[in-house]
Image 1 (cartoon, rainbow, N blue to C red):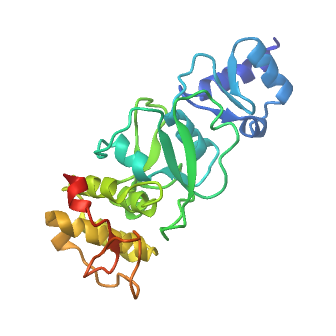
Image 2 (image 1 turned 60 degrees about the vertical axis):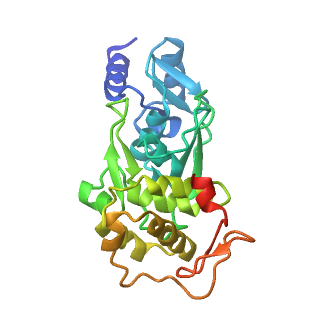
Length: 272
């Protein structure tokens, strides 16, 4: 290998952190041709775990590396949220030990290679605008303050080289309720809310004003009020639009007299 090509290879290997997954598009933009990448794979310097994506040989493969690569390298405006964000934080009372579905919230499309890496976890993208929160445009450059205002934060998991943007509990519960009752049962969401004694009322109040889903806001308030957390009494609901009329969430359910949304009639029994 010529000195120039060796330098290019060394530069690439020096840039790729443990767990990073880089697409063909990203590598070509950095000056690496497809034929050169094929030689790197054949020579054992790179692996290609799925068509169109590469990693350093011996690099750990995990869902966290996938999320980091989507956010930081591909520049896709998406974050880990909803139920999986709760589960990862240890706040989900209904932990499942089978293959997990990692819920990403954002815009655009997931690259085809994301669910072809042989991982136990699968990835699913939800429309980031469904709740009306400000879209995350640049995870790599967003400051901690900018993220916090949106109910997000940058976290490091088992791969130090792969920090990720993840919903805080305050935002994740809204995203989780957005999936109710189709993907998440009301009883599950209620059990999670029962354990959320440490939420920040100022951030919750801000998210309530920003959220556009009347269903989510009413459901959150109806369930949260049941558990008497100290933060509930500190919520500032000025400017929170709860819409008009009734919302039938559960056919045959019990209408909440204050928030006018139907809840399961046996919710207390399900909570146990």
